[in-house]
Length: 114
Length: 115
Image (cartoon, rainbow over all chains, first blue to last red; front, top):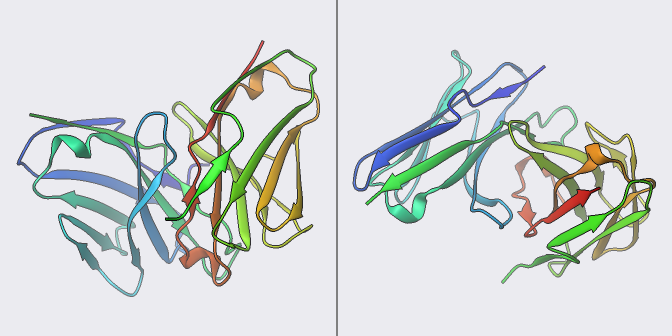
């Protein structure tokens, strides 16, 4: 039972354009969401997060949008740069439940072409 | 600069061997985690520790055990390695608090191959 879904295994965009990575979740108890970026042969690094009390969080070129009614979040990267090419993981947690646990999606490979 | 290090980047073992994967963090974090990453499956939590000598099972603990004798060190043990344990193993740590809200810091990973 996959509670966090990233339905696009890969995405390719041109440098300077917007990248939109999508994530859906099924567990209505999830109230905190994170995005991690992973380069090959490196561990994931934290990118940005959002609490369920917000619908948007911005950090430089990165913005995460949360639509609770649709159980959907998206990561926008504007403008995209070749160095953004990596696997992006969406993660979610239920602070009232097993609050140690992050549930990760399967990841989306983003390729930004020069 | 925060640092999580793992003892080996690449490891090749034979079926039935006992395997130790070591993880050390220098951030004085209370919480430490072991995940495995497999193509098409994302990151799955194997075990978690929120204090020295404390541990909790994650989603896929079968075939694994852990040890946390010191705060900075968290070991993953494969008692009898099997080919289906061939994977990328990632260690992470996070500070005390409401863990769900805490960023987890990951090590570079250990690529384990079991022949």
